Every structure is written in C-alpha cells, then in structure tokens.
Amino acid sequence: MVHFVVAVIMSLLLSLLTACGSYDFTVNERVVFSPKPLFTDYEIADEALGDCVKQAIIDNQVTSPAQLSVLSCSHAGVVSLAGLGTFTGLSQLKLSSNQIVDLAHLMPLSSLEDLYLDKNQVVDPAPLFELPALRILDLTGNPGLRCPGANALLRVEETRLPKHCG
Image (cartoon, rainbow, N blue to C red):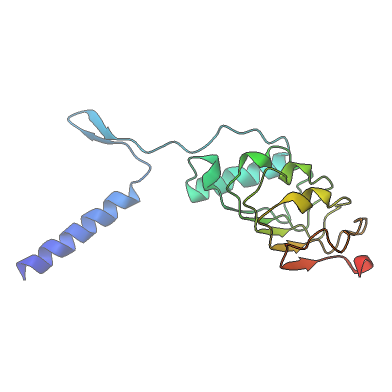
C-alpha cells in the first residue's frame, strides 16, 4: 500500500512539473532550469500571416523554425507568403480562402507534403513543381490559374484543380 501511495504522489509531482514547462526553476536562488524561448527570429510582412504564424508558435511551443510542421491560416486575409520560407519544417500548410497570388515564397519548403490553396487568386503554379515531398495539392477555386501540364505534378498523389483545368 505504501508503494502505491508513493507512486501516486510521484505521478502527481511529475504532472505538476510538466505543466510548468514555461517557467524557470530555482534552487537556493540559482536557476537550475530555464526553458528555451519561443522562436521569434523571423520577418513576415503580411500582418494576417504574421499573426497566424505567431499564434502557431505559441500554441505549439516552437523554439526553432524547423519545429513548426503544421500551419493553418485559412480565412485569415493572407495576401503575401513572404517570409514563410523560414519555416522549413512545414509538412502541412492550409491557406484556403485567402487572396494569395504569388507562390514563389513556398519554394524553400522542401518538406511540404500537404498544401491547400483552394479559393485564392493563384495564377502561376510553377513554384510548386519543385516541391519534392508534395503529395496532396488543392488549387480549386483559383479562377485565373494557368493549368499545369500533364507531367508537371507527377509526384503528387492527389491533385485538385479548378474546373477550367478539366
């Protein structure tokens, strides 16, 4: 019975310690543990995208740019993707229902697997042709899209294009 009580107390203490992951721990007024600060060394000109990235960093406790793997900024009013290439660990990116035209800033995202750009203003999909890990791509609802050639997206497992690309 004593072992059970000790195990329960230890479990509670461990739970409390993990809940305090963003605090410094001190012993005799000396810091013995200080968590890594959240990543802030990036510049994103588009205010809506910047706010979305900032919230994702906070929510996921991101301390380095490669740690941010999922970003969802749908219906956010995003116009420009400038600066997003800093986050090379992104594997899933949802940018549905924004006003995005230029995709050149996605080229550094070599780990990107799932990309949702439906209901934007994308015209030229060519920067996406160089993304080696891309497997799901949604470009529906981009009325001015220049339709990619048949061989342009061979590596992509699932491609959704606007109706005019039929």
